[in-house]
Image 1 (cartoon, rainbow, N blue to C red):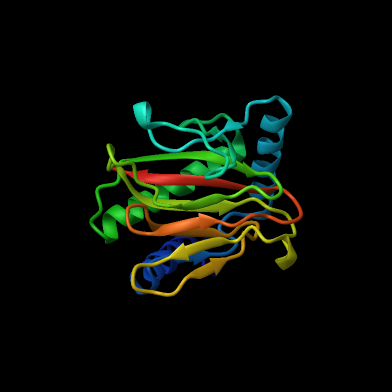
Image 2: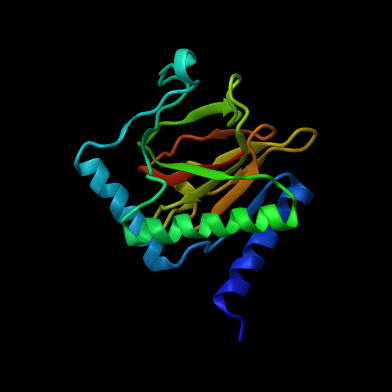
Length: 205
């Protein structure tokens, strides 16, 4: 029987192979269903208490907010959490970092992430996950928290690999997408019928 550690490493290897072959990796069922529900409920709690705030783009003096470019609301995760479901997710990201550093000789030493809520019809125009004045972000990950997402809901992630064709990825709950922060131009398409929920994160050095 394959143990949990072996399954985890297989997921990591599939993500890395996808990155090498197609400029992005994609893994379904990246977290267990109860963890997915727990993270979704945690985010719902932040919405209820008003802790989700409108996101912007840029950093420090270059920071701006413009809903014609980006319309999501976010809440940053603490690097050390007391919530069991956040802890499971953060621990798995730590394991992924260890695997990347061991097998790909990266120098990742930090992970940051936030909950992200896109209301119906909101979007995020084409962009890179890299600041002009801060090159610390090396790899991006997106974990989708949506329940029973349907094709007609829209809200796809559009990837624009350099020299390749656009790839549209549906935001199915439990699906994780992985790509280079400074290379992959991407876009969040509007969701037509309901809110779109995710955790966006970055491996940094």
